[in-house]
Length: 336
Image (cartoon, rainbow, N blue to C red):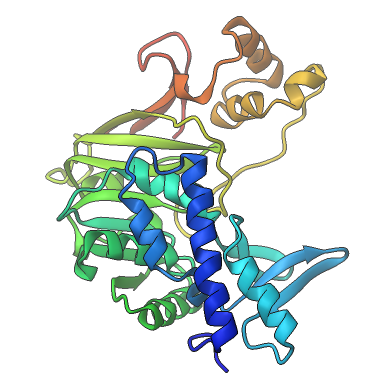
């Protein structure tokens, strides 16, 4: 049969499932900042980007496959492809290497990217290619979209999925932390993998006024690039600043030069309600290495358990720091 040519029953199911997903995202308010994204999600068929994926089962993972000989298994695969849920698409030794993000989270991130007609967009983390297809559809010009991933098998698969769906953005195999200088300058950068800090290489490849949206410390930061530093070899004049969005976000770490270096934190002496608080864990991740857990807890209580929107990041040349309320205020933590 082939996943690119569904039989009649499955083709009808795909259309209705995609329409149901769009209604669900709409109801969530995910693209409230830019409702024009609805049309892209209506048009781009997600199932073409996940010909197989893995779901957790007791003792491991089960592979769902669009070309299973069992028609009921094919239907389960198709319904899952249009669920508002992240899908594990690549495992290595039982570890998640790549995934297709939850569609409503993708919609919110794309809306917050605030693209305009004619914008050149760089995506860090090609994944399945679905996000790049949504961008290409919205911008109406494949040449405006570049997506990069370190793993050749990921970029090769993404190219194939994109071509099957009728989109041909530029897919580059390389280290996302270094950006894609040969395709610069960019007006927008969207990142779909977690990093410990914002690489200055990205700023150097941006036009002044560009917007960067990236996961960091279980959150999503939006930065406005005021000075790219492109003229200086060291990037010493680069400057960007912004605040976190309200939503939590968990992404696969970036592989390569800017790879994430997290670690477990001992929480002895921290009350259980703080240990179980998503916002407290965000503060711990953001200040990792600068605040001991008890210090973080004292700050968190003193400041009224601050939501994510009160935190921000400043990048100034080779310096980068996170802060609460004000970039030059009393609460600031170096990120590199």
